[in-house]
Image (cartoon, rainbow, N blue to C red; front, side, top):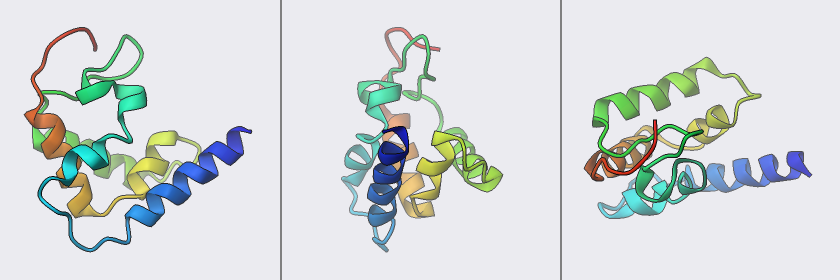
Length: 105
């Protein structure tokens, strides 16, 4: 069951990576894939990192690093691999614009 979930997630992400341009309002749509673990609007929880309010550069650099590590057993590598650089910047921009409030780490 887990392998099916990972496969479907990777397939979904890969399909979104074919877009060559990212509309200006797409950050939230792209980020919605992150909400299950990192919380709505990136607020995080005790288990997952809070992304809201972090700098664009920090979020983007972490995503690129995850992609470069190419540790195929890690879910974040699968996610990072599925996005273009432009999409990663849109994700980072969206989370950076969110107010840093609530719980999280």
